Length: 123
Image (cartoon, rainbow, N blue to C red):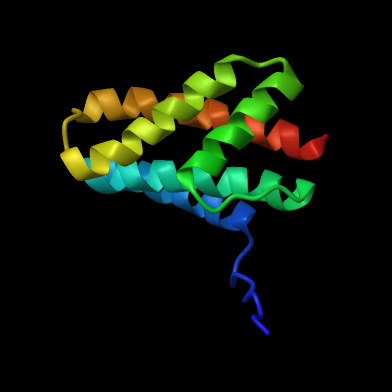
């Protein structure tokens, strides 16, 4: 029998903490950590929705399917674009191709995504 271990903190707490850390890393000028922490905040926000609705989220492909489903449910096509921005920041962690200003702008878009995820979690 496999017992699934529960995280020490909820995905909601992880998401909020990671976004705060992303802001701190951006202030310090750490492009890579700001990028990856922002991605992590978005991913954990999606995990909140997936858990509440009984949806599977184990892979990147699952994440995109969840975003597409939520986008249709909410009538928010922009949700897909905002999630793609978060995914681009994840990619930036490996490539270090974006300036601090570019990352700052993208982080604001991801914060909009997080706000939408909060609304989706309330419904």
